[in-house]
Length: 277
Image 1 (tube, rainbow, N blue to C red):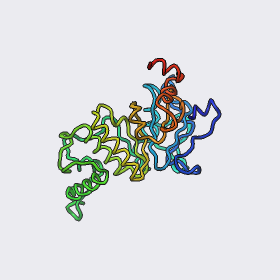
Image 2: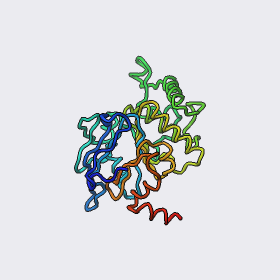
Image 3: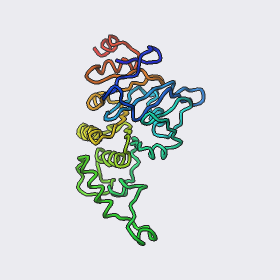
Image 4: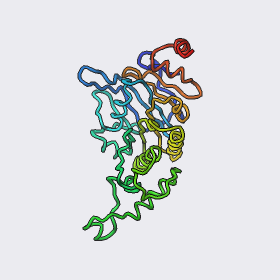
C-alpha cells in the first residue's frame, strides 16, 4: 500500500492499465487555504482511463475541497491541474464542463417539478428546427424525450416514461437521473459526491451498478464516499485523505478496509483491531 509520497519518498502509484498510461485528470502539489486554515497541502491526484477512483477520509480530511478544485468550483492557491498530461486552468465549473468534467453533488441539482427528459437537458435544451425554433425558441420535446429514453436505457436505468416528473421518483431513481445527465454531458470524467448517502440497501445497490455501467461506457469515475463497503465493491483504487493531505493509495483485493481506516485515522491495524474486538 502506498503511503504519503512526500514523507516516504515513494513513487507515483501504479496505473490500473499500462504503466506508461497518462492520467486523464491529474493534480500536482495542490494546496488550498481559507484564511489561516490549510484545507489542502501539496496533494497529488491521478485519475486514469477506465477506472473508478474512490476518495475517502474523515470529515475535514480535504475531500470536498479537492473535488471542488477538480470541478472548477475552487481554484488552487498552489499547484497545477492537467488533463491528458496538458496543463489546464478552471476558473469556474463551466470551464471544467467544457473539458468534459461533470459533477453529481449530494443535492443532485434536479428540478423536481420538471420531467425526466427536461432534467437531462436542463440548460442544454434542444430547439425545434426552422423558424419555430429560432424565432419562437420552441423546444423539441419529442427529440429530447427520445434521446433521454435511449440514454437511460443504455445505462440500464429502468424508468418507464421520460414524461414522469422527478418529484415522483424514489431517491435511487433521482440519483439515476442525475448520473445519466452527468454522463450525457461529461464525456471525459464523472465525479460523484456521496451518491448512496441516505439511500436504502436496494437503491444503493442500484446506484453502485450504475457507477459500474458508467465505467463500462469508457468514462472514468471519481467516487467520494464515507461508505467503505460500497467503495470496496466498485473502486479500482482508493485515495485516502487525512488532515488535508494525501495519506496513501489502497487497492481492493490487495488491502483491506482495516488498512484504509488505518490510513484515514493514523492508527495502526493492531489498534483498529483491538477497538473493533
